[in-house]
Image (tube, rainbow, N blue to C red; front, side, top):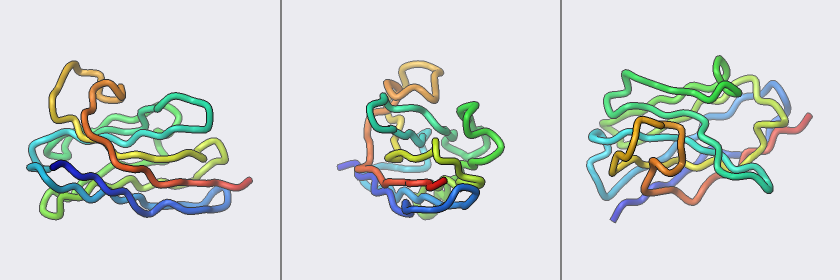
Amino acid sequence: QVQLVESGGGSVQAGGALRLSCAASGYVFSNYYMGWFRQRTGKDHEGVAAISDTGLSTWYADSVKGRFTISRDNAKSTLYLQMNNLKPEDTAMYYCAARLRPKSWSFLASREYDNWGQGTQVTVAS
């Protein structure tokens, strides 16, 4: 079955960087769009970034543009999120998600994604 396993979270100071990874299995990773989402305490899932199946197209939330970079290695079935210049407001649980059954063109909408990982915590201290 589809499995998504995130790693790379941790605690950093403001201005620091982290690289999240998401290892995918159980489906043909290279055929599907992927996304990163985050959930801050008491808030809904927020779309952070999304990437097309080939990796040639990417989309970002305004709050992370210029600081975060989504990428993928289809040969390794792995999704990445490079996060630079982290801010305390980036503190959240981060999830990767697979868009296996497209419903719309809203690539940063959580309803667009069908399978989710268990999440990895990112904490940014001021």
